Length: 367
View 1 (cartoon, rainbow, N blue to C red):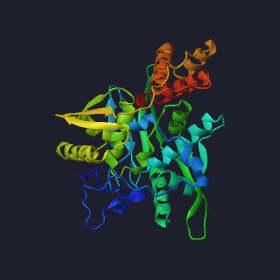
View 2 (cartoon, one colour):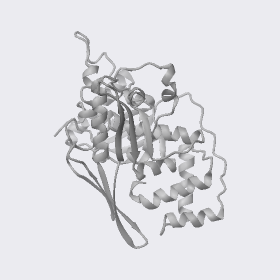
View 3 (cartoon, one colour):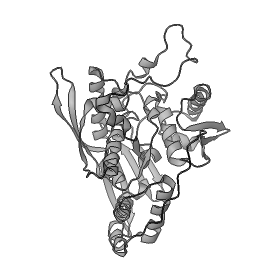
View 4 (spheres, rainbow, N blue to C red):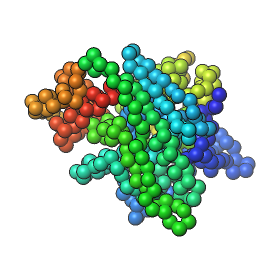
């Protein structure tokens, strides 16, 4: 089996090589983090200032591969009568490092929504900005790796069954619909790329089913470190703590290692974090076969409670059309709980609730 603490392929091949210690330096003395490759640039300061956002469904489910080699294995996950399959292309499954591209796109969209600007599924981006914001290499190799990552994102598909109103509907969709290089410089580097997000990703933004990530996430060198942080951010959040069994965690991480090897890798990360404190936001402790997660000490003030939001009667009628078979008032309760937990303050509550209903109706297995 391929270990999860090794260097991923394509878009991240060689990234851990940049973090190799100098001759004579102890591997225990150095930080496990990748170096910060880019300083704040006055001309691209907006990409640093935008809050880093990721969709919560990708944190919940093992959609991205941890492997350093092209991962061609189909994964199937079942929950009662619902199931989902993640299917790689001939290029392999998208990796946790490929997810950086989606995080950057989602962050730009959420920033636009917060500024009151319209958003669409198709984004035109400067490749350099994307690479800088995600702490990637901006050399010719970095641009090549970006192209390979786009290919894996476009090729990875998710198939699932949607059960509503006594009917079962098969649905299949990708992480992105397409990617196009708009312009290249004379030496072959892409300057602009155009990415069309899938309905699944775009509707997560519309429903604000996104979570803020620590920018240090882009410095985590090991794929498993990134998955552990994602799971902590999704399930623990700002709660006092969260526990999960090691075997269930292994499945949720998408690890292909044995349970014994997985335990060793988790313990290695915990030991490194105890020495360097490099894992952002959360502390991890292995107690028997349970992983205990809790937020690291913070001096930030608590988030004030959200004001009560009134919804129009017509909103409930329209919401039923987006989520047929669902109890619309149960959906409202779920929606309000989501707003409270994630401290979301929608500018247009009715539109936000409808987007929530639309996503719940179309992708019930990913909530």
